[in-house]
Length: 375
Ligand SMILES: [Zn+2]
Ligand SMILES: [Zn+2]
Image (cartoon, rainbow, N blue to C red; front, side):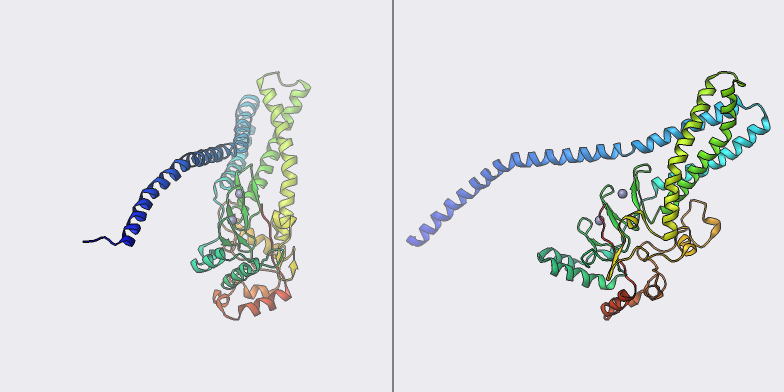
């Protein structure tokens, strides 16, 4: 069998190519080795930093917990057991103190450990939309893809430029009043703010608990200051003997008054926000709707605003159990036209109608709605 010259050349170039390829691969691998190591180190470092950040973020909670534990010891042991003489007074002081303490500790626990609510799966882009969105480089076309995808959703709020609010990090269409928290690394429903003192995002899932926590903290400080004041004066004028308890009682009064003053402002501000049905973020940057910003879009009147946060059953208002109205994904709005379109109050099917865009436009013309805030 004779070998044709052309075939031989082909064969030779193929074998040299085959020899060449593994050589190239080896070279590439040799070069990629240090790069991969560098990347590995970088990833390990960022993981370590994240871990440190997570540990450090518990420091404010630890400080509060230590102060509360000390106040418990100082009040129960140093004041009630060591200093008080009258047994009736002892029992009454301890009983009321423990009721307030339990409510305060319970609401603090719930504020810390209630996980923030996130948008549901229906706010994620479909696979096809996601692919179209990722492959599209023109912002206008991306905006169009989002606005088509949002037609089936109860979303009224818009970005400052009038587009649908979309979180690139979570790859989700943001429901009304939802914002991305850079500390938690997630989109949080009806986000109010990220609170370092509870090391948690305050939002739809725990706003009621946070408010009660502020309220019961104030009550705790007030009760301690009011009951300790008499003994503070007795120590001051020298009626009671100098002892270790004196210093605990002096500090109890000082710390409780200090916390009372700072909490009073915060609690007052949140009461005002609840009465207006606004989140802290919305107070700083009003939600934007089709026809512009509207800071009062969710204001339904004080009674209904309170019901939105605390629920319909007044017996549950002051107990830290879930009772807020709605699902955190959509909210009733001021105009009756909006309410009739709200899935909380009407049929969700209407959002799937083909003629939705025109309807939305008509609606937006009468009211308004939408925010763009990144925290
Ligand atoms: Zn997000
Ligand atoms: Zn957060």
